[in-house]
Length: 504
Image 1 (cartoon, one colour):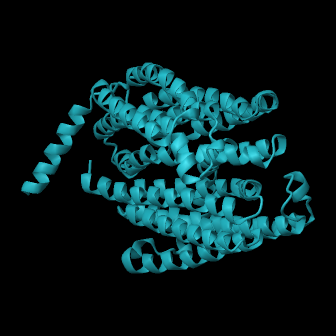
Image 2 (cartoon, one colour; image 1 turned 60 degrees about the vertical axis):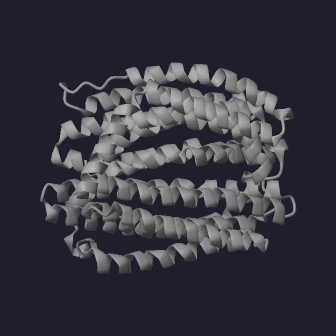
Image 3 (cartoon, rainbow, N blue to C red; image 1 turned 90 degrees about the horizontal axis):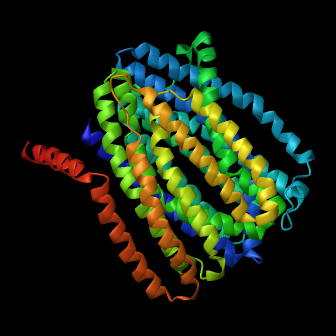
């Protein structure tokens, strides 16, 4: 394992999570406090954004498969194959953009406002907003392929930083315009302009720092373009699955319960997703190493990486999920100055969903970074589709908690399936045990039972008391999990590596 490369990726992703925190903390209060009917306006902006996010599935599929495969070829010394993969993927994206762009005119003939039950945006504004957001997604396809291509030459952290800069610039533009109560089309236009500018900047950086990655469309091959479509399509299904689990629920709740329920659901989910970024950072920081070891067929090091990274993630899952559950009243009070948005049952169920997702995302990374994702894509698209069908009557009967119950069951099912896929990723002589995950499940049961009781008691407690309980409980969980999941071995390994590097 290349510790320096992992640490660079870790630093880039920590920067990214800082940007995510800024995004999630900065923008919602501007909507809530600067616009009249701020909660409802924010809910409508979220619904409009979610309505077109599914187009990102195309981008995710092509660029993820192409960059993974190019990295595998590059690490095997097959540089011409790596260049051909990149050029073929870029040409394929240009063809997709050329086919999708003319369809934007159709949006102006659709009753978008009526379909989404919008009360604060006219149909013309909604159609124009969606058109601009779609254009932004199309431009972002090129940006993502170029920026994430740095992984091929061992500089994935550089591409991650470019993505961080883009997200930060888009967030600051959105916040500034929201402060001035800009219309939805103006907000969408700012996202498009910022993305186009950064696409030009990243291309300039590639020419200076990584000339091997300068796009050369003449290197593309028609046969290779066709070979990219199937595995990219499966990556696209994974991204579409993300839409079904992330944006489709917003549309479902908007239609059945209205913008106030969407706002509460989205804000609660934001708190948990923001906190889970620590787990995601740790998992993503090893993604480059996974691809390298697969390219080198170094199964021993890959197995070692799997074992050590799993221990860290399993230790942090209960600490993060329970800690956020207990601190939620404080976050709603301090962040949004509105504790009425804190609903204990929603926070409890969201905490359970977040805990299961923390486990799943670690297992998920080993499949996607090795391009062994086709079975996973089929399962996720089917299970999330079934989740939405089951969730509709549950939402009708139980509101937002009804959806969260369906979501939790789906995440549990997918995690169990992923564990089996991880086992088949390694040679038969290398055993992958599911015992650590079973141990975590037991640990979570004993952690969440008292935490759920405290979550309801927090309705009447002051902020200092809640903060003190959260700090004490989090420390106790962290110490317990450290010994339960055997982190002492990893601690010794890191100290030894750092000691060797320091002496060197």
